[in-house]
Length: 344
Ligand code: KG4
Ligand code: ZN
Image (cartoon, rainbow, N blue to C red; front, side, top):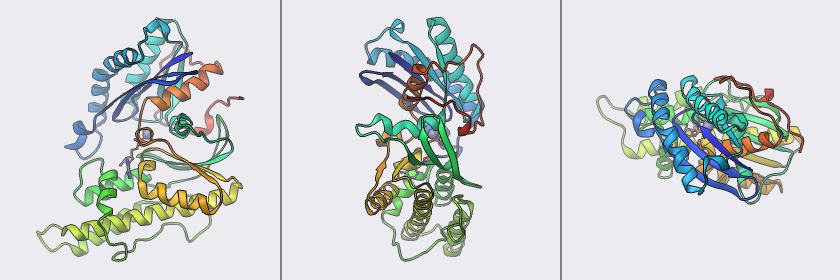
């Protein structure tokens, strides 16, 4: 069986085709980063319009890449939420309509379930149960995962998401949007002992996060070291980036360790855009080596938004016959614990 996956929840148009026997057979991505860079963040209306321009041509390119015709497709999966409502509507309208025209089932996929299952596209996929640390531009969540659709939220950010904190701090340092990866690169030149930022909410029990204070700590340090009219010197910028990244990664590590202790699981999955962060990957790999457990993360291109994860999650629900009806429905907010269970 072959499924077409469509991702348009934010600023990436991702289209992929997944075959249940041969795996991923097409993967197309168009990033709108340049379109939004001048505005310092995603402009929802511009995102929707660009998805309209790109989605159909990328679907055609994916079919060509896989040497398939539309008649070979057995189902169409699209991200139905969470995300920007206009952007979601584009993928959902096109996906639902194509499924109707091709007379195949349509599958409404949860974007975060897509991220969570992305490591399953790799050669050594995780078995259940595991703890998932989902870290993206919009979410920071710890989830106890006991099967497909069996997601218990055990911790989350009460304010900014990890990726959002990265991006806001990057902006304060004068880096272009989205600045997470750029800040991380700058941090490599930073001196780790010059500044120390707090590890928020690690001094009290619980698995929730708060990252807005970390951004404020960075802002205050920038202010203290800026002489009037002058930009920060480049070493100070790198030192601040380093202190920020160390504090954020350390906080994610402390809470992940707690989540593993609490659940008794010894497998950790990290996914979402921030899982592309090398410091985070290295630290969590060390943690799991110490605990004699395993860590799983997607290849870099599947950490950030992509169509492959939507096609993969869609295939699981297609096989379980969990189809969406004819209505085009999207859910900008959609709790993960409302998803359908799949008994494999
Ligand atoms: O999952 P994603 O592509 O989109 C959402 O669903 O939000 O995540 C994007 C986020 C952005 O905040 C971006 O700055 C961050 O992931 N990100 C990184 C890195 N690569 C992407 N943050 C830190 N280090 C990176 N290497
Ligand atoms: Zn995402």
